[in-house]
Image (cartoon, rainbow, N blue to C red; front, side):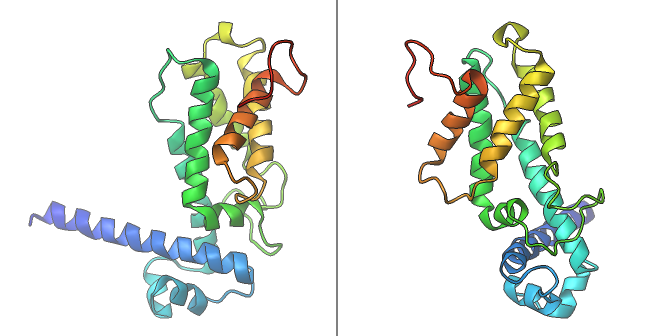
Length: 211
């Protein structure tokens, strides 16, 4: 095995260990709170000895902030997925939100921690508290705006791109903040978000409720 391959393998093993620790920590923080959770509990939940955690993280604060980074990176990746511009706008947006819902489902403990945080979580890397109503919303709106610039034609929207991004972000965030288990059918939640964002709440002649 070459030196480069060996280094690459060690990096992958390290990143996998960090992710295992982070996902286990999300469950412990959600159950015990940030202050009450100990490094020993975090290590045990991830299957590590407590001293070994310091090989990957310097403190509980770093673990939490890395959890925020992990969630943001996985949501950001959904905006880079290929888009079929021949599909209707509603279908394009629905696919994007469906990918994000799938990420949240796969990382349920992580996203439920961040969307319904215990009162003692520390600030993120930007100094914002998780209980700030605007936490994450501004960045999500920016990502949506860039996505709409790339994948939506101006003729498809009756409002400027900035307003479209703000409206879609607001509706999507409102539904994302519901418990993930609140809807038996996640696809129905996504369709509702798209329908509300594109058509509002008023009944339109000849158009019933979303399927």
